[in-house]
Amino acid sequence: MKIFNRIWTKTLGFIVLLAFTAFFIVPVIWLLLAPTKTDHQLIFGNPFSFGSFHNLAHAIRVTFTYQDYALLTWVKNSAIYSFGGIAIALVASIPAGYALAFTNFIGRRTLLGITLFVMIMPATALVLPLFLEANAVHAIGSPISVILPFSFFPFGVYLSYIFYSSSVPRDLLNAARIDGCNEWNVFRKIALPLARPVVALVAFFAFVANWNNFFLPFVMLPSNSNYPLPIGLQDLLSSTPAFNPGIGGDVPILRPELAVATIVAMAPVLIVFLFAQRSLVSGMLAGATKE
Amino acid sequence: MSSVEVNKSQPSPGSTDVVSPAGNNKEKRGVAGYLFVSGYFLLLILFGVAPTLYALYLAFTSSGGHFVGLSNFINTGKDFRFLPAFENIGEYLGIWLASLIVIVLGLALMLHSLARKVSAAFRFIFYLPGALAGAASVLVWLFMLDPSVSPWRFVLSGFNFHNLGQTIQPSHLPLIFAIIAFWAGAGGWIVVTYGALNNIPNELLEAAALDGAGAWKTALRIKLPLIKKWIAFMLILAFAAGTQLFVEPTLVSEASLGLISPAWSPNELAYVFAFQNNNFQYAAAISVDLLILGLMCAAVLVFRTKLFEVE
Image 1: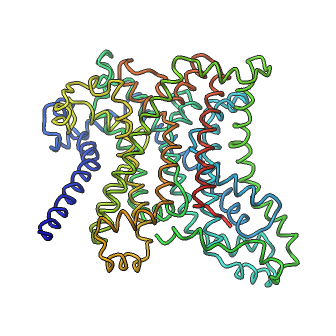
Image 2 (image 1 turned 135 degrees about the vertical axis):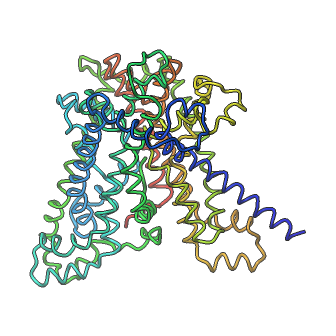
Image 3 (image 1 turned 90 degrees about the horizontal axis):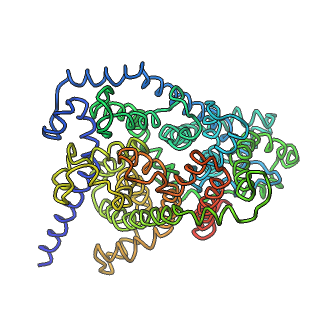
């Protein structure tokens, strides 16, 4: 009886796992297959069938050439904003984490506490205040209004602080000081080269956060030529007849084309996930993630 | 995954300085400290502190710059869209947090009892949709919810939904946003919870098994209490992020042919005040409401769970 019970629980558990696997993976599979089909096939065909490479090429061509290669502009914008934000965030946060871990200055604990608070608070809470601020200094519409707020990344400071205080021995730095290194050289020659793993970690997290960010560019960048990808997706959504039956048929963006744009938008983050899953997970456990 | 324990093993900076050979350099290193944090400090002031202070200033003044006390807060609170917006995210958060507790913990415990390699495959699949967080996830789910193309159409037609308008009618939205949040976010939390479970010392679990505790008992009485901190961490962060809902209702309302209010969530209401009514004072007041909510979450997390004991 007991054995029977156990087998039954095991089977049930496996069914539950498979059901959730389907829940998580089916939308992804559907999305990847959608561009190979025509809108008509998507409606009337098997949802998991493969259409044809001809359809795929057509959907890709239509999506990329739409509005004079707007999609490429959005990709370029997303890349500039994301990487610009990451670069400044790294330059600011690695030395800051180092200083918080190893130097003693007045206000150090306060700064650490504030960093913790700002890190836990959702970044979205600051978007409208940032907009009001940018509006007051007439910075709306400038890429800077997105890049600079991106580069304020307290989670990066926290990760770098945790890394230095837990995995770099203080004696190593003191040895360098005895050998005559000044403070700058201790950081640049000893601490910075050791930080390679945490630099990658901060960059990954910042990239995922920046690339997918919607609200900030949504309020800061009103013009189409400045849109990053997520706002571009919204633009496509608002003009496609697929979701707005009232709109005339002159917009060539249908479901297969929307799927192409969505895949383009997610691909870079997916690649980061595939190659950096392990370090992303360890980072999530070391501190916090913001959505 | 051992980094869960990272927080516990920190040297205390400063205390060893006195006896260290370079103790006489203490003064100099203090100055160096300021220089090293200066870049971050500047960003913190410009893009953390300044916008907060400016929002506070706007929230307490009139458009002419006169101090008006709490009247912006009271007037926005009386707006007919204010309470519904908070009710909407309240309902959404209820579903989302309940699913985190029941399903995420359940799945993590199940995966934890499987062989490592098998569970790694499942964890990866569950985690994958996280790549589509934000606008992309909403687009994918608009397809999933549209009975004309959805691979789930048999489920949708079971509920008698035959077009997108029927699936995304306003009363369904909290559940729909919870499903989207779950799809894109649960995997990450499953991975985190699994990591926390992995950090439970084996001796404890072996002792429980020797005492005759079955899988259920071990899970409920031993494993869950031991990762309580992480559960709190997950719930508070998910709650804080959930109060900020913006992209999901904005995009879904785009596809709803005007059925869904453009001020569905508090952040959207603040956006409407700022962009449609040009009323920055009201927008700032709601932003301050939301900032206070976020701040309270952070305070609970920092002061109550001790997850971030930094020294």
